[in-house]
Image 1: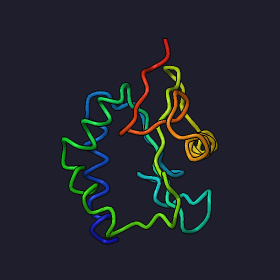
Image 2 (image 1 turned 180 degrees about the vertical axis):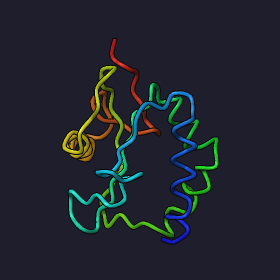
Image 3 (image 1 turned 90 degrees about the vertical axis):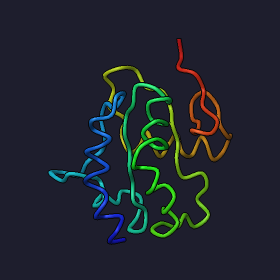
Image 4 (image 1 turned 120 degrees about the horizontal axis):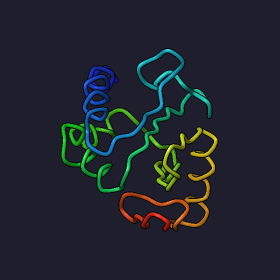
Length: 128
């Protein structure tokens, strides 16, 4: 985890300056969300808001963040929680809650990708 933790601040700074980035979850007075454990001691959360799926995809796969994606199995296990990442559309100016995220993740797990909960691999267009 030392490599992950060492890379977190530079990757967050990169995200903060990436076109399309809007917001990311942080702990109370903390620069990141690594200390938050709302769903149990072994579940780390991460949440951000982007203007488009394309902007998020660009950050994830076309920046230094890709190195972390490639190494994620060194740092994290998912213990059968699959999928473990969910995307959904929110109105401009809205900040999602962790409860929103958990509900959307549950929806994705129960029903698969759809307009209310989807993945980078199977995105849905923004509502009109």
